[in-house]
Each structure stands twice: as C-alpha cells, then as structure tokens.
Length: 101
Image (cartoon, rainbow, N blue to C red):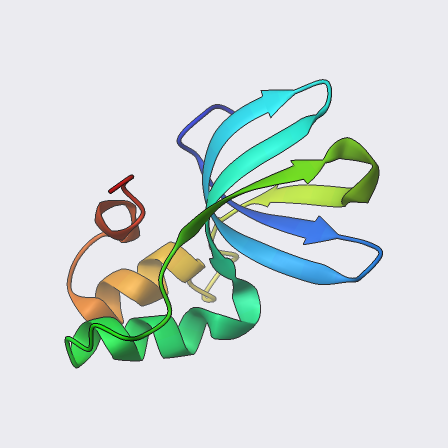
C-alpha cells in the first residue's frame, strides 16, 4: 500500500473500522484521513444534502499495536468498493472529500 491509497483499517481494543486516505505508514503506526466506517452512510447523506453540521473526515494516527489489518478499498466481483459506492451516490470521487482543509 502506498500513501494516498483508499483503505479500511481494522483496529482492536476497542474493535473499530476506519475508512479513508492513507497518509503515512511508519514503524509507530499509520496516519489516515477519514471517518469511522459506521458513519459512512451518514457522511454520504450529509454531502448529498449539503449539510454543514454533519460527519466530517478527521486525521487520525493509529499506533501499530491497535492495527489488526489494513485493506485496500477494492470491489470484489459484482460488489463495488466503498469508493465506487460513494461516486455513484454522491457524484464525485471520495478523494475530493478527504483532502486536508
């Protein structure tokens, strides 16, 4: 995986999944700009309805001991990737919404 890849980070203690743009991988951990995966639908809805007080991407550092796995956001057969789902529902690439402000 390279910086700027769209990934899903699975974490442990507590169990969480985070979706976003991979900013950096280093021996201490990874830095990702994105959102909790549970908020993905809400995030798309807030963008579609142009609500300002919605779910917003944040930049997070996850220490290596919390990382269970990192998956590239890829479609599998007929199942689209989260990025493709975002593009279909919102009409713009997810990368545009994960820029640093």
